[in-house]
Picture 1 (cartoon, helix red, strand yellow):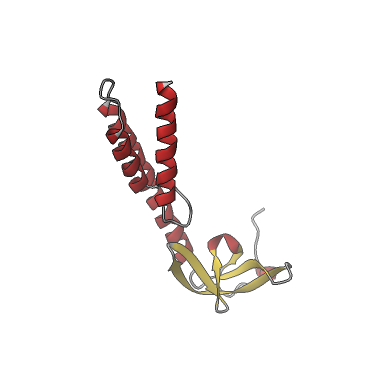
Picture 2 (tube, one colour):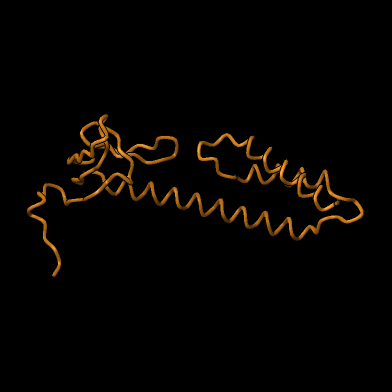
Length: 147
């Protein structure tokens, strides 16, 4: 009976933390973890307190996950800047739902809401929309393939 109440409290706390999240991805960040941490400390059973080492281990894991996420974002940004000046084919869907491939040089790379976008023929595309990359000035029929 007491265990059910604790689970319900944690469920409510997790829901509140998710509701507080202002990110567009809906991800659970370090601020949400701190909110849950404070809520758990406020509502813990004084006769059976939670072990501090568990909280510290969870905080260390959350900090590690956040650092890995930041490193991933920086790697993706660096990857996108590597396309500068290269000829690429990007794929996108038009208004009728047809797949349209556009070939052109990457004119610039910007960060929009922390996500890199490449510009081809004046239009922004996500890095995931790049289908082929060519050396500058090399036409597709001039490509060489390894045996």
